[in-house]
Image 1 (tube, rainbow, N blue to C red):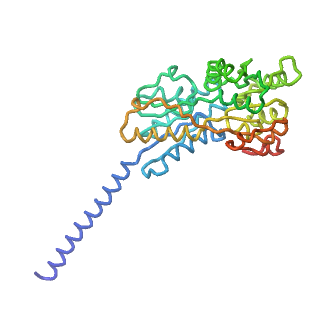
Image 2 (image 1 turned 180 degrees about the vertical axis):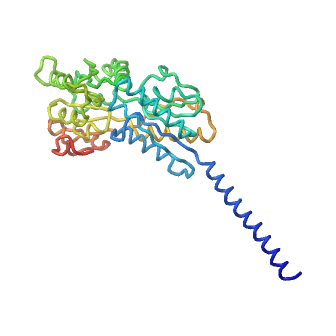
Image 3 (image 1 turned 90 degrees about the vertical axis):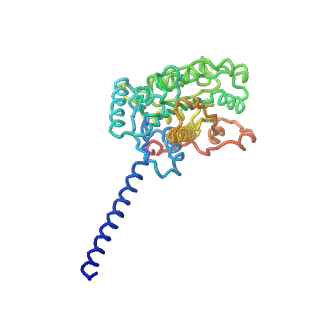
Amino acid sequence: MNSRAVRGNFMRVLKIALMIAFWSVFSTLSVAEATVKKVFLLDSYDATYAWNMSEQQGVQAAFKDQKDIEIKVHFMDTKRNPSLEFKQDAGKKALEAIKAYQPDIIISLDDNALEYVVQSIKDIPAVACGINGDPQKYQYGENVALVLERHPFDEAVKLLKDLVPATKKIALLTDDTKETSGAAVLRLKSIAPRIKEVSGVEVVAYHEIGSFKEFQSLVQSYQPGQPQAVDGLLIYNLHTLKDENNKVVAVKQVIKWFIEHNQLPDINVFDWGPQYGMLAAVTVSGYIQGLEAGKYALRILAGEKPSSLPILDPKTGDILLNVAKAKKLGIEIPIELLSVAKTFDKMEALDPNFLETQ
């Protein structure tokens, strides 16, 4: 065989080898792309709402060892914009975003995302977490698994009793957000008889408040020396109180006023309460909510049906105490509580720069 023929055969072999290599790489890339699972993380609220950001952190933690997961976050911003019209419009925009993204699964955070978006979707699997309302009130399909958010009001009241044994009467103050506050009030009313039987503390009033002015008036009416004075206040949400122009007042402005003017022991079920200057809280973990939702999503992506997964109610949380507030009120915290609690040494809402911080 002459050198020209040898060279020709070599070039043909080289060309075939290159083609095989090219198609092998292209095929590998195509398979890799095809195996990436797309997660649409639908947040009812906004990036300034600490609870939901902790839920997002939990979701991210569930996927941290997964190299084939892509996550897209979409905010509905319905905490700062609580009108029905805004929620409905936010729901339409979320549905459009989901259609454009074409996810393999949806993870939704809190009730508005379930009510205005997820329950209308029947062809994409979903996990809805942070659900305050009764699941039976929603019209979701078999493609949806649920993680409930149930705040430990009974444990919070017991904690107040441990800190202030003379406590007999408390009042609940919250905003009028039906998806969260409304559901929480119903739950507290249902367990109030048991709370009174176990701890001797009666919830004498339940206030779902629309305006900042009404909130201020109620707080002042319950202070020591007033005709309807109580022994403590249970604070839930303060995020949708409106001013005289029907505009939502920034929650930190509400909290700052409350910490400056309230002279009573105060408890809640969120970590921001003691962090900002309330006496105590027993919390549900937003991080655990998101983590469990993420775990459910991984099981669904692996082939399990959402309808086969039981409704989950994570029973985890922490005891939080503000030592500075206790000192201000003259309360001596039992050593056994200090040993198990997360503590705060200052009342952040009293910091001159409080309103300027995120």
